Length: 306
Image (cartoon, rainbow, N blue to C red; front, side, top):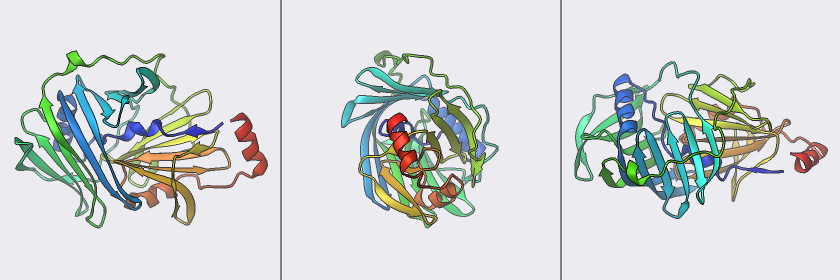
């Protein structure tokens, strides 16, 4: 049996809401509490070409619903403590993401902000820096605190991804949003794992697992974030490219605002899904189990029994 990440990757379509500096962290917390409806364009310049998308956002009561304009039957509902993926009105998957730990700090510093304007509205532009290198610019609406635009940069100063609202209607759309109720209890028991507690500047904030042997770990450096998945079966991707990182072979797919790596180990399949700029991939992957050929008989056993 093969496990696909086609649905799982949707959980990382929005930037992490933790921030580097205390003042910006407060502003992003306020952004998470803002109520609005909007359309957002995501455009990323990746090593495999440009990736873009238009998504619809509805945020109310700390929960954000994300719908893809090209496929309105698919929706992600994320809020304080979890996410739920819906296809055709049915819950496909859900998980509780209430962290048992929090990031101890951030390597980023943020300036005091400057007055700007976006979509005809008063806003504030903040620049986030890592040891003198600009890593992100964030534009927040002055009136309601919503995050209107996020631009992330590679270490050499090139734009990696831009997420920007093209329409924005502040106000509480809660009456128009039907709450999504999971079919079952979304809580996933916390489990022990051999995955490292730190990968470079990234801290492991939580680990979850299920009875089938599927494991999920979440990492953040205070702004960028990614998830690592371990599964007894092989992980597959649609139309991947082949990438060599640290002299190791991976299959990889860049999407709008995220990258997915998958590989096989002696124990099963692994995947990494995150919003990381390309210059961060090498450090993160070097700290995870390396790709390995399990051999013909072990692979046959996995294909037959998972």
